[in-house]
Length: 239
Image (cartoon, rainbow, N blue to C red; front, side, top):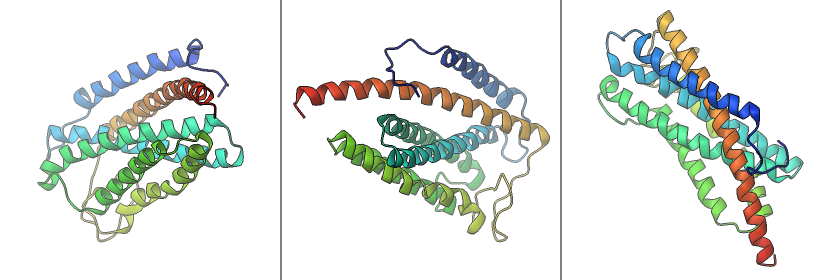
């Protein structure tokens, strides 16, 4: 990450990613609705699964990146790592809410309820609350260095909710399907995908991953501008 601001011209690679993201997202919508076969039990509502699983995937990826950025900040304090960590948490929360919403839409016909105290649902909710607290607590610290140090430590500790959520359906008895790998022997959930379904899921995962990285780059550039504004404010206040 160069020491520049969002006032700088947009990098050419970012422009390419903008176009690529738009094409991949349009392609993912097309194959979800026109290529993937209709699931014989749940019908068309099963198509929300592709966006549900993909949003859960990118949520976990960016939250892990936030923790890694936090570790690097503690080793080599520089604002760029704090900016990256915050951007990851913000984007992670957005996709976490998308994941929960699409999960509820899927669960209504599958489980006959919008909400259940399933281990995966509970641990994912804990993850969301932990990172919402991160955003709120950061706002209460005026000093940028203290705020960045606090954010780095918090992001590292909060990241433990990511593997907890991922492995919850593999450890405890659960209704939630295990898409990758095998789950607990006592688990009730199951999910068999045909080859077109697998290709659709992989394409949607790729599309949302590229889209998220593009979004993250834009958010980091915006963070640099916000950081410059705060520096000017602190100078004006004589701190």
